[in-house]
Image (cartoon, helix red, strand yellow):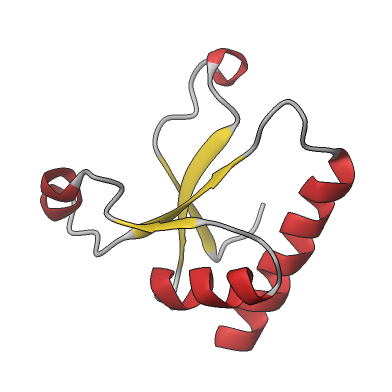
Length: 92
């Protein structure tokens, strides 16, 4: 568990959910993190996720979403985690 990362959404019934998650990082703007991750070869969705009223209601300026698929490998998941840690370190 990383105290810097805030997972958005519910954690109930995870075995029934799609392999994607929305998150933000304390002290790091979502667009900056998305740009750095892109330079590392990792694509993330950033912004309001087509849910601006919800973002406004919860006073969130934006977030990031990572989407995985059945064909993604454990190595790609490891690369995502390593890239995320490196990007956060660069931006903090």
